Length: 309
Figure 1 (tube, rainbow, N blue to C red):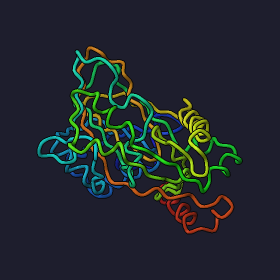
Figure 2: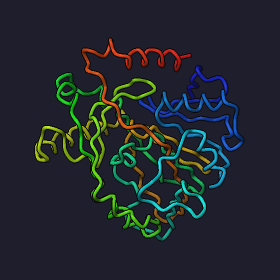
Figure 3: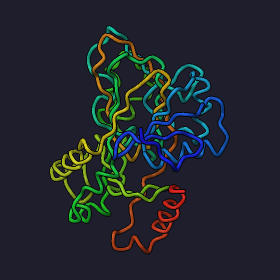
């Protein structure tokens, strides 16, 4: 297995050529020193999805550990565990049938003004086979677009809507919802279609399953473009697949990826815990012709050197 030599305190092994890495050699519950913790965050910035293996977490030390990554984002839909405001438990029993939560390609809470920057999912009870999570890179999706498509999308906003979110989640009988969760149905927010990552400066396409229209176009005109962007974003060469093990903590750079939960473990129990770390209001990427002269471009060059160090 290839090991990334840029990391000295943890073992980081890429999963695919597009994104994703396994991390071993760190116990996050044991409050690792700042240099080690910084390497974990650096791996997340580079690979966008990391599976930290062999963790010993419970809901309480999980919430405490997650707080080191930043303030919690809050969740306007799912009810948390009792006494743990920021931890949501997902349970699927062997007798459960039908769709699993998150079965379609999506971004977590894309309809929030500041979608979560990091989503974390910890596996406590994992099926012996099945239940993987697939991710796909919105950075690679941007790179795959033609210059003409990039130019057409640059500077435009996309309208993301929470309509339908409550109904999808309400179908899950074991998933608790907040009393005001139905308010998500009325929520709409605009985000730039072409964004720049605040740490790395990488450009990515901000497309999601709840993107309804594009500024300057009608919904009917927007629909084929949105479908095309989703088709590009979910091309298999942009994927990585996390194979879960008990004690795996998977973290992802939520605005830069889409993900889907695979429903192939009927007859087995699965228990996971999720939390989300506050992100940023998506920032429009500079114009392509001006990028080299912008502060963001200079920041990207600086961060690239730092990440490569």
